[in-house]
Length: 261
Image (cartoon, rainbow, N blue to C red; front, side, top):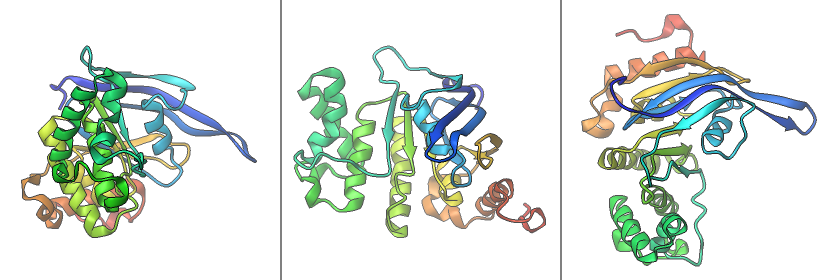
């Protein structure tokens, strides 16, 4: 992995915010992580450990108290695109116009934006629904439009904050598989926040495990799996072993109960 170009460098980042009743709250403490080009890194950790705060800081939506975030983008390439839990689509815009919105804002070229958006919609399997409005789309379809809007930008880094959390298990698994395909097809680099260990191991090249509040980096676990068989890999001994290793770092299972290869 180290021979790949660096996409993002997070160095000694600390974050805090003003609590309603508790005064100043330390959310993240001296967190450092390097993400390489065409790599998917998933952040997992207990609720309240600062995963989303860290993602927002990388996106430039939350100020840093300490440390630096450097995103390495090519000239003319948007540095980041963010996919949140909610699709947040404009109800008066079609799927195509929603997917084109980000490119429109950057280029001011509506024709180019629609061309890129249509390619992105086709990539997420919604080319035939391009002229549908959000009210005509299921929740899963709306989230795919959300994904299309982000990848249409062709960003240096894709940030995902539990984008499938509100979906049922079957749809979630299907979109996980589609996301893997999309990331491979676009050579995208991604930083993905999730509470689900299986989702993290299935999607990631590496899983970064965070300690409880305040969030610090406990460990980084490599995921070396052949994911060409799609969801079948989730039934393999190797997959289950890596999941157990992540849970051990999270403290979810006693060390002596972890499956060993």
